[in-house]
Every structure is written in structure tokens, then in C-alpha cells.
Image (cartoon, rainbow, N blue to C red; front, top):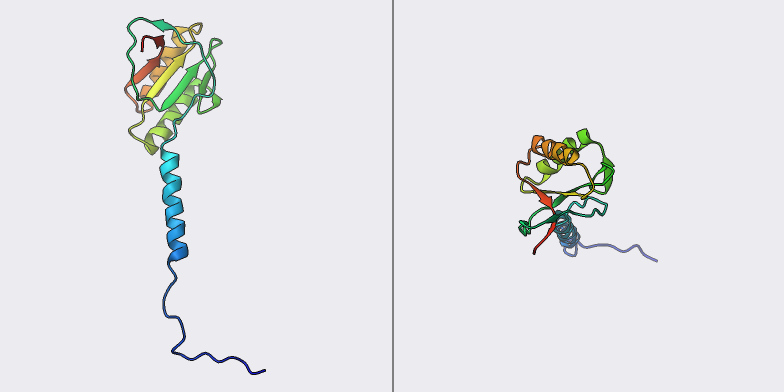
Length: 135
């Protein structure tokens, strides 16, 4: 059997861009999906009642303060100093993020105010408090 010979006229001159385009489109879809996620606190709390509550659609970083004083953020229990570091990191990634603190109605207000101070020290100046009120 004779070895096959390739004529220079038959050689394919060019780069196949299809795999690269598939990869780029997959990356685009991935980043679109990832950037739309809301940072959940990770625990459920019983919010307080508020007669003057206003409904807002914003708030994509949620911080929960449980009745026993535990602070939860991004589905992890965090200490008070860690709140500032996490808010700084999230704020650097997405500067338009807003914060909602969901405090349990049995939690101490001092813990919530300390969390608010840490959030503001982390660079997000407008902080909302999640309540159960009129919608």
C-alpha cells in the first residue's frame, strides 16, 4: 500500500474558529447567569412588624441577624469584623449592590446597629432593614 500524498492545493489554510466561538458564548452565558444572583443570608428569621414599611425591589446582599445574635451572610455564619471584609469584597465586585439586614424580632437592636456600622464601613452607605409590613 502506498502512502497517501497531499497536494499543496488540498491543504486547509485557515483557523477553525467554531470551537473558540462556542467557548466564548459559553463564557458569556456563564457570566450573565452568575452576575444576576442575589447573595442570600442563608437562614430564616422572623422579621418585626412595621406599619411604616416601604416596599423596595432592590437589595441583593442579605445579612441576617438571628435571635441569639448570630450573623449570617452568604449562607455562612460570620463574626462582626468579617461583615466589613465581606461587604468590601462584594462591593468591589459589584459597586451597585445594596444591603438589606433581616433582623429577627427577638434579636437585640445593638447587634443590628453594629452590623449596619460594619456595612457602612465596608463602603455601602445605604442600608435597608427587612420588616414584615404592608406591601
